[in-house]
Length: 88
Image (cartoon, rainbow, N blue to C red; front, side, top):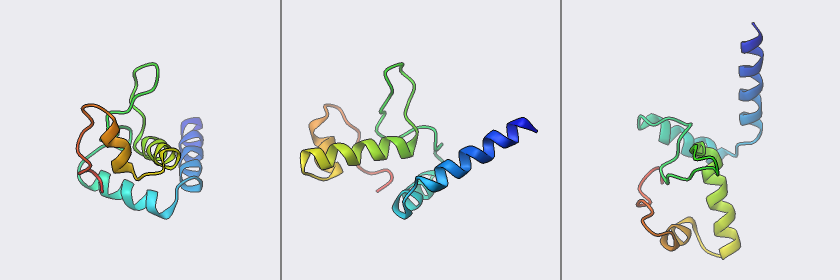
């Protein structure tokens, strides 16, 4: 019973903090058979665990805004970054 309370809380948090674009991109990523707990850019936290898809997407968007370019421009600056194919 307690676990369900936490799961519901997580779903509410995610729903409240996702834009419509986030929801569309996440739906495409998951519908292609991927987990929402990983990201196509192999972005990881300091402890080595991968960021979830939405967190990684938000970080890329923040970097793109700071650099004054799009996500493609950010990925071009990262050596060995995977192609921009998924999920865009």
